[in-house]
Length: 130
Image (cartoon, rainbow, N blue to C red; front, side, top):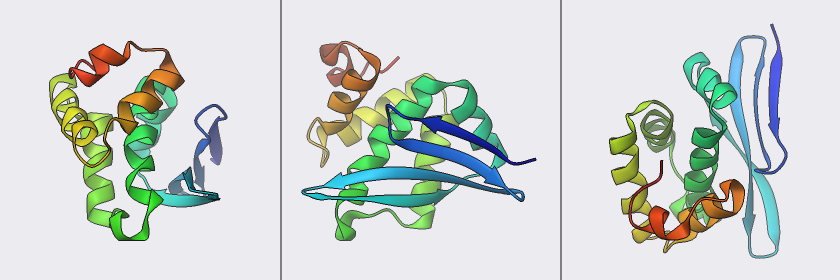
């Protein structure tokens, strides 16, 4: 059965067509805007469909690396992000996102999550993503 979940505010879409699951993520880089297709599975789709906050965390974490070709995630790295953000326990996600946010993302992940979910930026920056 074909299904589609559209997150207009995140500019992201998850869909299944003919048994193939994908996540279509809109990325902005400078003046350019383009879409990145990430392969997902049925379990990923279920979490994205039922947990908008984890979907928000995923979008925020994926956005930054895809802004530049040299930092784009390969398939194995994409799978790691999906497994960590969608399926790991909250304490693991807190550590993972905080490390990313304090590293090369330079606060961009917490900023995007704050805007999309109205979370307290200080809590996010301090590693309390949930």
